[in-house]
Length: 354
Image (cartoon, helix red, strand yellow):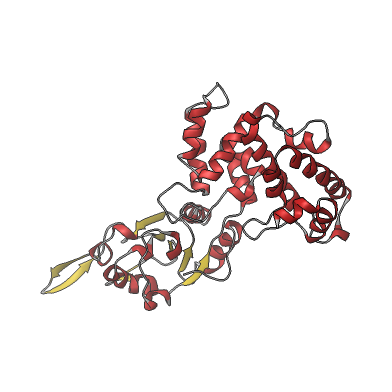
């Protein structure tokens, strides 16, 4: 399933608080974006224990229990994890990775909060979650009967909210600083091939590994940093992250270049750093230049003025990298009014970029 609307973590928290107590909620989203952590956080916020079942590892008897003869008739004894006396949050993770038989076992549990003759304690909450078909994860088609028993919501990644969480939870400063400069690199859609890709979870993993290597506290070989980054996140993002670490001696180099107190690096051996700075420059232009020129504040006016001069300087160092700054990427472009000025002042560069 791919819903037409997606919500951020904060918005999803509100959905859970208002919807989950009255109807089962199913959270759709790509792997590694924090669905499970958010459910656990929700359970803690409402003061209920969270019991997690992993759908891909369940058999029908793990839900409905096993039969036992009592007074000449049989009854099913529900599993101990489910049969609790106090209310709780039942989290059905990877629910759409279940077999059809297991999905059937969930019907009465999700719709009536019942397993055989056992009813979940009053106040219990049921939440499911799973990946989408396009994510390349283990996903099976969910039956229409099961789909129709739940409220559906799709979660998306929000870099500002993730960074707020990251600062509070001690994520390595290299990671937080990098994502602050390149928020678009926090998440990438799962690739068609078997290779690492960027998610909040994979950046968290890189943070943990960097801490084990004590990166930033002591010198770590560039080759090791490269190996660690390429083992956790998308190849293109890993290359940019390595370039970022190489210019850590001057963390504010891009701002200094914009102010005119520094220049873009021009040596061949600094080409990866130049590419990182150019990408960060492009991201800054997209983020800070308004779509409507009339809405520019004084800072945006200065940035616009300096940007044209800097793109011209960049083209003298490396024309392809300068083209990259003004080119459309994944449907994201610089404001039209700014591109009109680029066409006027740097017609050859704008033509090649188009």
